[in-house]
Image (cartoon, rainbow over all chains, first blue to last red; front, side, top):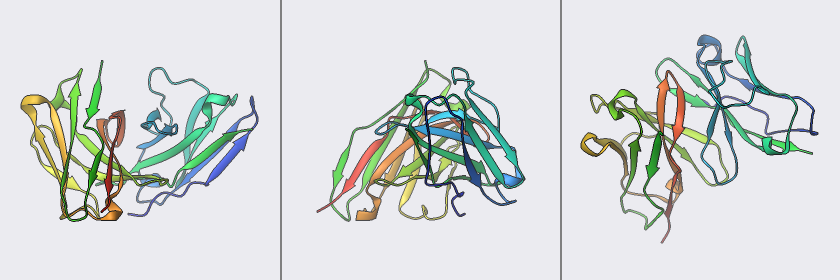
Length: 109
Length: 118
């Protein structure tokens, strides 16, 4: 199972909105509603930010939102803040396993 | 509160074995599967597989068969990852994570750094 494709880096200024894409195939992202997004700060464990494409766990800011169209899922961060600077990974169910994305480094300018 | 607490960093020689533990608390251990995720230095997350905490049945991702073994001790709410015949390429942080639902990992251990070096 190949890793899902994400842009290596995305940047934005405080207050702006950014979108991270996550491209797979009809066997993973396109075939299931089970896409998740994780935030990872340096030296820390990943944290769940979005699950089942567009649902936010309790305690996650509503500035984070998820969507999916075809084989591509997206994470949008609105009102970008300094604390959002981190690595972000998507993941998807494949029918028998889970696959992660290649990861995106978000930089707040 | 839910916690997954992993064992400490390990430094091993090539060819040796290592066993990483993941102790769960704050929920009913057998209610949720445990997954294992690898992160090589400076690299992304890689799903290694999962273990059914009710039956003890493990499932391994491609690339993690043979030298990797998932196991449990339900009497102490602990999952284990054992890696045998360690190679330099096994140097990584290994995370355990709890399945909330399909392909959704809601809680993560703090990670265990395994370094393989002579």
